[in-house]
Picture: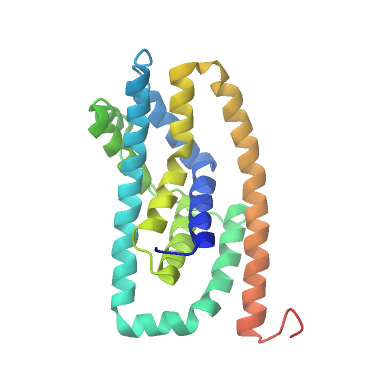
Length: 232
């Protein structure tokens, strides 16, 4: 089995954290507005949500597989990563923590216009999958930081080209599946749920950022300054 249990759980959490961040969450709900037009057919809404999820999974697995295989296939780079990974992780975690706290911002281009996305959504399950694929590649600053800064190193460390990225993709699409089911069985509670998720996202980002900062500080003290944190 690829990856330890803690690594698999981390991948899911990173995906969920990505999905409830403002930019990805907004795109997920925008996708739902396209996918749930046939609200009378509950099965169609649910199927579209699942297809959308699969589209995101394929995108993340594809990008991750190319990067992980490419990096590990280069012997010199592989040796470098094995030697320097613990030293690299510290600054990366601190950078991610600052990004999650929104103390560091950087712009990224978006992919696709609303007209193109709407045309994709009209293509049934295949269109929903394509929509998920496109939105997955439309990296926002936080999603890019979590994917390239945390998930890819995690996949390399665990030697997981498929399972860990797939779990990340499922995590990023989780709100879409939840909202799809809610819309299909009664849309009145969607607004309240969105407000609760937004509030949860605010605190989840802060807590995760603090964990990243503390872990990054630990790695820097241990592997750069060679200070024993635990006094051993």
